[in-house]
Length: 572
Image: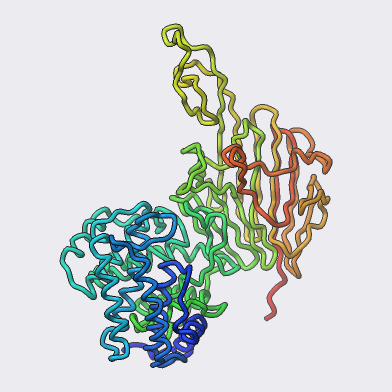
């Protein structure tokens, strides 16, 4: 027997849709100039959903219909002769158009058969969808998640306008296999694209195609994501290969997926995640349409399962470990793609943050390690080993070379040699043909995770070069025990420091075991973050912002760093 309806959730979802829809309905004939096709399609879908929903203030509103009609004219005008939409930096893009077609098809399902007042809207939606069909049927993609967004659009087109060719094309894409790894992460390792593209697309495909295996894929990803939820209500992104690797990502977009699978499977851990995702309020206007199309979303959640603490998870494929307790939540990361590919590139995991620590409102957002070695950038582990249940070793060895004269038989009378990239820079010197003298530099970081933080043991070996360990704290507190050096920066030597926010705090204490004493606040050329030449050559940076504390010096060096979170005991 299905669970009863969650009326509070349904009303909250309707209010979320009404917030953007009501102003549109108040000026239904205002032309939406400069609005992208994806926003136009989403607005139409939201307006139609509000018209259909008894819980919306726009239920049965002719003004909502008029606003939808105005937006549909603009959307049709944005459609090129190919049926694809103009706009954006991806020119004539089937997957980008698929995002809009998905909303168009959902709106078509909601509008069809809803009465004569929506007849014109239904016809316009059908015209737009059918005009795009051929290009989506034959079009290609350029990112992994695009395959599933495109397949979802084809499936929705088939749902409203049955065509076996659409199913055949979907099967052609699905035959490649879903790009989910053994740990439950999609190949892009992105919370953004999992929540907004892959999971919703695969859920739709599972329904239209009756493919339970696709439902299982989503469940696996959501189960893994449970261990990536941070105390501040965001999902860990440091390991992502997409744009979100440098930004926090909220849990809220996962709400419909956790909610739906919690209701259908009875999983209490998913129910807990769904409640967390809605804890800050429901603001997604698209949820109203989702509840109308998938009524199971409106059911009461099963009883949430209590969170198990302490807990630890090591994702071997992403080389990311997370340990959570009542006191602290610590993340260790050694899965950058940069050591293997020797470049910074869109689509690679490039974030050099190797540790984060949450202790209530006191948050250490990033720990990074710069080395002044041939301008090759900060420490990004090439290898991560799990030594014991709670202990990990991160290692990177950098090499640079000086090149000898070319062998006699490879010298040219015209002195014109191949322009080659040798890993640091490019030059017309035929580098692969030359004998080379290598210089190497190895950094090793051992991390012992504890219930209240972590112990670090850092070994910097190789030639004498400057290094700087950077601790970036989230704004809201002030480092105590460190010396200000300007521009939101502080210097730490060997004395302890504490970062306190309210009653929560993180304590940092370092001890140099071998090598020179740490740099004082007068050595600002050492106490800084260096993003490396891949960024600086184009005038860019991937530097953090916030309150930054530095410990630095000249290697070789061996040091230990104790990180301890502390929070008041909960009131019983």
